[in-house]
Image (cartoon, rainbow, N blue to C red; front, side, top):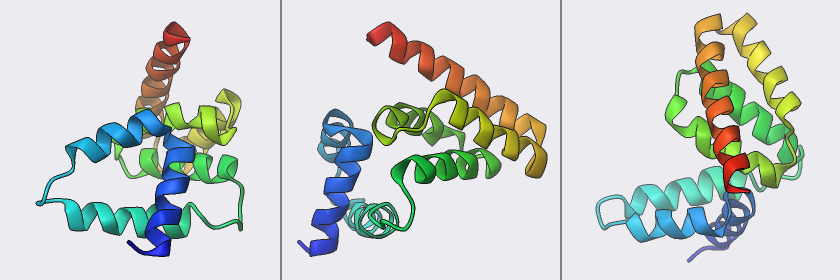
Length: 126
C-alpha cells in the first residue's frame, strides 16, 4: 500500500465519512480492485489531498463539474460530503448557477433537484 493510497483513504474518509467509505470498500471485488486503487491514489490522494485550495472550494468545483458534464449519479454523494467540506447550501447554489450559465439550464436544474432531495434526506436523518 503506497503513501498516496494511505493519504487518499484518509482524505476520502474525511470528505465522504467512514460509513460511506466502509460500504464502498465492502463492495470492492477483484474486478474493480485496480480501478479503486487508481481513484483512491489519483482523485483522493493527489487532487483532493492538495492544499492548494480548501475542501470547501474543491467541493463546489466537484459539484459544478459533475452537473456540467451530466454525471448526476455522484451529486447526492457530494452533496452529503458538504457537511464535511464546509460548502454551504448557498455555496452549492452559486456553483450550480455557474453551471446554468456556462453548461446549460437543464443540467443545473437537474443538479438543483438532486441537491434539494439530498438535503431533505440529510435533514430528516438529523
